[in-house]
Length: 273
Ligand SMILES: [Zn+2]
Image 1 (spheres, helix red, strand yellow):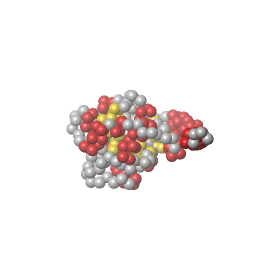
Image 2 (cartoon, protein in one colour):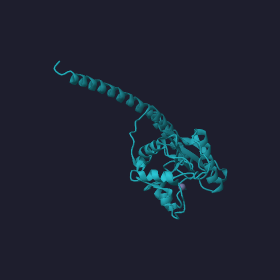
Image 3 (cartoon, helix red, strand yellow):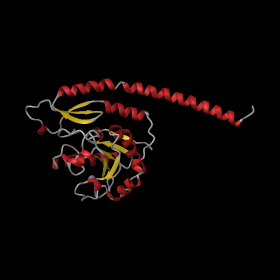
Image 4 (cartoon, helix red, strand yellow):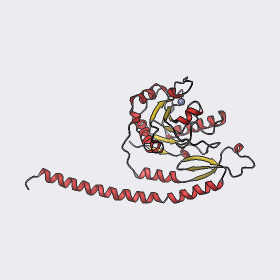
């Protein structure tokens, strides 16, 4: 099974409508579902159009800065970057809870059961992205357990049972593959885009821009900041080539060790020769 990490451009052309607040010291991750009636579907296209629909609803109807969640994970094992881990969600109930908990959206409808691919994707995301950034934020809770008013069924019984089982806490073996190197490389690319909602740009702030980096999306009034980030990304990008080369050398070493191990085993099988 392979976990697929997808960037924000896999589902939207919009940056955040307004600047996001950095998440600094969470205690864990809260798990959500869309609570949708009807089938969500698991094709890449249907998930992407759902996410864009949530974003438009959260921004245009609710007046929030962006889609509420940090990440989404679907039953095919795709991990979708929404706000990203770096930024506080708007999903958990109030600002205090949003400061204390991250927010991951499991793309499950009423009839779906979390698949093994979804579980592996969650474990891999948590181990390689979330806990790397927030080593102390090891808790996992259903939204229903952290929402201040408590009046939500989110993320549904199947996901609640999954959280109770402890499977989401397990840490998978994570290999550095060509795919993850490519993803890593693409995350290092810094994109500078105009903030999507022109209403948020005042006449006096001609430099308000959205910036996409390895750390997620942000918006800043300083174009100079954006240029510095772009320069940093340009420096880091070429490093991915060196990492790939190191991986090749390690693989060659592994093959040598395998050969030696096989030779030793063959000797063991023919004692006295
Ligand atoms: Zn929820």
